[in-house]
Image (tube, rainbow, N blue to C red):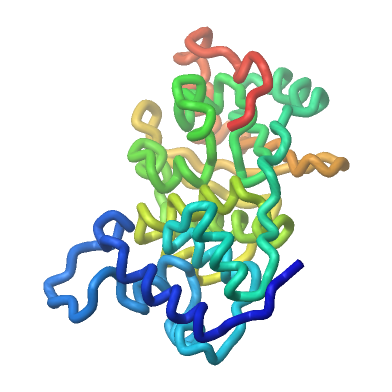
Length: 291
């Protein structure tokens, strides 16, 4: 049962909580201007929660009722533990929709078979939240040695923003990053109550200013094909077509394959890359695991 909303108490709670937070611990940059208030400013909370300053101001003033998605964003931005999060929802008169942890993602057998049959084309099986569930040796040669990463870090968007090698690989990083964040936004629209997605977005929002900016743009992208321009440290420039095929079930898994025009310099460079790395890495993971 939801309680009756108490806008004034909610506003007081938000003000008190932001006053308790250290801007540096929230990943906010240092500023030269002196702070007139303790903790975070209103605009900083709004930026971390990816909502407008005006909307957040009205929340603190008790002039608007917060939606469940906004409450989830605020709980993340204000770093609320389970008890404080429960109190936040009670003050707002809403039920916390956060479910228990979702079942482990497992690579579909058909996806695994298709991946195993691709040798010279880099290919990934992407799950929900763009988690990297499986890959072939060509993908490991192009992107990263996924097997050396902790399962929780095998995420396409996370690598794009946090891994310097993956960042430098993308010639038009800003374009590719915007497309990836827009795809993640689409994931959020399909499953807004996914706690793992909330954790991923919360971590990247507090750690990376570029992600914060792109996430706040609210773009969505469901494209299944495009062109990628890479600059690999071993073979140089690569221009490849990127296509993704989704399964017909509810797993949310898709097979992403990169190919180059036969006879093109990119095709020849890709053949060289895969021949150099042949035998150095196995398709992964050997057993299905949750990223």
